[in-house]
Structure formats: C-alpha cells, structure tokens
Amino acid sequence: MSQVIKNRSEILFLYDLKDANPNGDPLDENKPRIDEETGINIVTDVRLKRTIRDYFINYKSYDGSADKDIFVKEIADEKGFIQDGKTRAKDFNENPDEVLKKCIDVRLFGAVIPIEKASITYTGPIQFKMGRSLHRVVIKHIKGTGAFASKPGSKQATFREEDILPYSLICFYGVINENAAKHTNLSEDDVNLLLEAMWNGTKNLISRSKVGQIPRFLCKVNYKEPNYHIGDLEKLIELKKEIEDEKLRDISEVKIDMTSLIKKFEENKDKILNIDYLLDDRVKFLYEDKDFKISDVKDKVGIEINLIRI
Image (tube, rainbow, N blue to C red):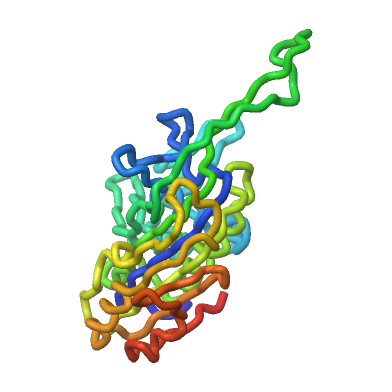
C-alpha cells in the first residue's frame, strides 16, 4: 500500500441520466428527490457512497476474501435477520486496527465501530455534500401494466407506476482532508480507487431505475498549501443553454461555463499543486463565452493538469 496522503484535495464530479431515478425518497413513494423551492434534483451523499461501495464489492473483490472487505454492507443471517453494527464489529474480532486494514470504505468515509466497552469513531477523510442538478428538473409519472394477474383467477394484470426524470445533470462536491487521513490510514492508492469507483461505478449502475447514468467530468484539485482549500467549487461552474431547463434531454444541449472556476484557480495558483481530471468527450466547456478545453488550464493559468488513468 502507498503512503498516507499528505495533501488536501477537492473533488468535482458531474454525471447525468435520462429517463431514470437517481435517488428515490422512501418517505415520498420513492420519487426522485426535489428541492421544492428551486426545482433542483437532489442526490444524497449516501447514494454516491453506496455506488462506490458496490463497485468495490462487485468489481474489485472487496468481498471479505483475503484482506479486502467493506464494513458498511447489508449482511443477513440464515434466518434473514440483518446484521447490526455490533455483530459486524465481531467479524473483525472487535479490533479497529483490523477494520482499518481490511475495509477501504472506513479508510475513505470513516465509521463508528461498536465494541463491547466503547465505540470507536473514525471521522472520514472524504466528505461529500449532497449532489444537486445544475438545472431545474421535471418529474414524469409513468403508468404501465405488469406481467402477472392482480390475484389468482383474475383476467386483469397488475398496474405499475413510477416516477422518473427525463434528464438531470448532477454535480457532487467533496473534500479530502489530509488531517483525518492520518487516523484512518487513507493512502494514495485508496484515493485512486475512489476516483475509479466514482467513474466506473456510476457507469455500471445497470439497474432498472439507474441504467443510463453516465459520468461526464471528474476533477480533483490537489493543494500544496497546508490546511487550505478554495471551497464551494460547485458554485463556480454554470450551465449555459438555449432552451428551458425542464426541456433539457441530453448533454449536447448544454455547455459548462468554467469562467469563475478558472479565474479562482488563477487567483490560487501558488497554493495549487496540480489538477487531475477525467472527461467524457461529449462534454463542452466555455471560458468567457468561448469554447474551452480542460487541457488548456496549464496554458491559461500555469497549473499542471493530468489525465486520470483508470
């Protein structure tokens, strides 16, 4: 394993979806979460972390074999009862060091480890705000018929109903805290796997309600100034479009205005070590109303920028 991280970083992550439900609210008939005041689509940080954990389990063998596991996952016994936190801790002999060694999700996001005498709390080095769409969305209510009868002997098939979003371009913002990383032993390898899981995990959510989610842009700003980060990077980008928000249906109908973000980078270039990024080639950017390429950041503000390899 690589060394514990020493530098603070900020993350911007954009992905979109079409005719899907990115994060249903179980308290509201599993409808997509909407800010009622603004019409903005909300996706919880818990949903993003689940995407990341599922990717680790399904694609990177973090399944409890060898020394690779996920601490926060649903485990049922032979009677179908779901394991609680104390029982989960016993899987690791109530040894927090063993949890940290094996469980990448605890190194990334922290956890409360319930042990017999007390609970050990690890603050996660990586914290995400709730994701929010960069535009207002509209919910579509869809009805259809099922394949089975509504009851034995009935000639009438069941009906199904669901709520979807025709389109949503969602932005997540996060911070990687080098100070908390010392307590969970978060390494550079762990962070690289996190970025891979965000990108590929989003793309591989091929369930009925999530199929069609596509990662569009991932940016990691790495700082050399101790205990410093710009903050609120998601507020420094803006969607430019020629049609109403609710009529958006594809990434080709928008451009992302990076003017405020790039100028903020320029103001802080002496504190920034470099920038890592991943990009879908259908995304278009603007700077001062002109087409702009992310790879041109180096020439524009003098900051090294590197394509992430996953």
